Image (cartoon, rainbow, N blue to C red):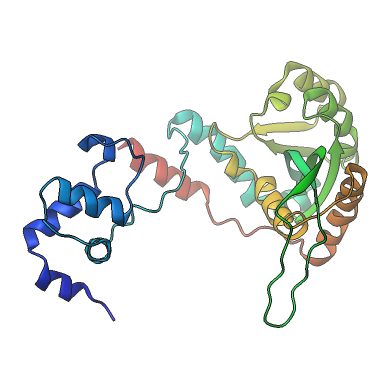
Length: 293
C-alpha cells in the first residue's frame, strides 16, 4: 500500500520540491565531499540548508519514492559513437548474423572469437558447506590464489556450438599459435567470416599478416569501438561463466584447466543453440539516425 499521500499531507509541497532538487544535485554542488546521497545524508543536508527544521530519513525515502528517484543506485554505461564508421562496421557484423544459416548452406561459416583473460584460479581455505533444507550454501571468505588462466572461446554462429582453448598468455603470439586449431576445422569452407573486437592481439600486423598468408579466405570483421557487445562470443562467455566458473573451487591451475577442457563439450551437449539476435541492421540504422538527429 502506497504511503505517498501521507507525505503530501504531512510535508509541504514546496519543501518536498526542495528535497527533490537537492537529491538531483551532486553533494559537491552543495559544499559536501560525499560521492553520493543516502536517505540519511539527504535528511541531514536538508536540515542544514534550512529546507525543513525536522526531517527523518524515512520521510525522505517516501518523498523519493513518490518522485521515482533512487540515489542509492547506479550503473555503468559505455555507448559507441553513432557515426558513419559505427554504421558501416555494425552493418557488416549484423549482415553476417542475419544470414548465418543461409551462408552455412552455401559452405560459408560465421564464427566469433573472444577471450576471457586472467581468470583467477581460487581455492577456498576451508571446504564449502553445501546447502541443506533450511540452510543455504556457505563458502569460506578467504582463499588461496593459484595463478590465472586465459581462455579463448570460439562460437560457430549458425549452430551455437563453442570450443575453448587455454592460452599461456593473453597476447598475439599465443593467439596465433591457437588460430590453426580455431580455423583448421573449417579450412575447406568457401569463406570464413571471423568476428572479433579490436583487442591488441587481433589488430596486430603480425596477426593480420598471418591470416592473409595462411587463410586468405578468412574475412575479418572488427566490431565498432566500444561495441564489443556486438560480438556474440562475448554473450557466450557470459553464459558459460555463469554455469561453469561461478562458485568454483580449484586446488591448482592444472585442475582449473582440466575443468575448462571438460566444461565446453558439456556446454555443447546441454545448452548450445544459436543465439536469437533481434538487433537487425534496420534497427541499428534507426538508432544511429535518431542519435545523429
